Length: 95
Image (cartoon, rainbow, N blue to C red; front, side, top):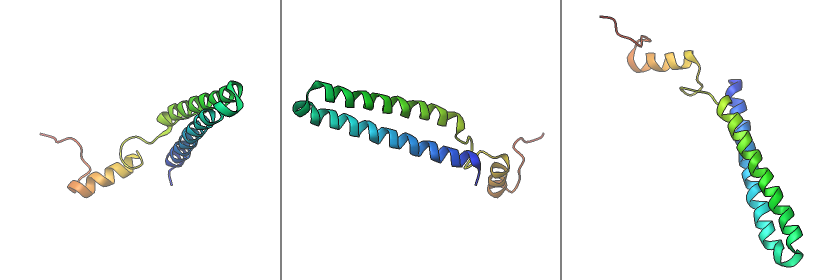
């Protein structure tokens, strides 16, 4: 498998984990605020904020890592798809 695809999948998984943590920390802050006070709620909101920032940073890194173009972004895969579709790998017509 293409290493760019592997990195893309790993980074997307990390983004999803960060987003789940964000929701969990925020929900914990809302649930714990009445019982344990503002200090505990603020702590969980801070963790939620940092996990959201982590998701954004990893998402930006993933934007530059993800494959571009066809399924893998490789020229040979795109040429094979073009050949299967048209019977030729030419992309420009000559006159």
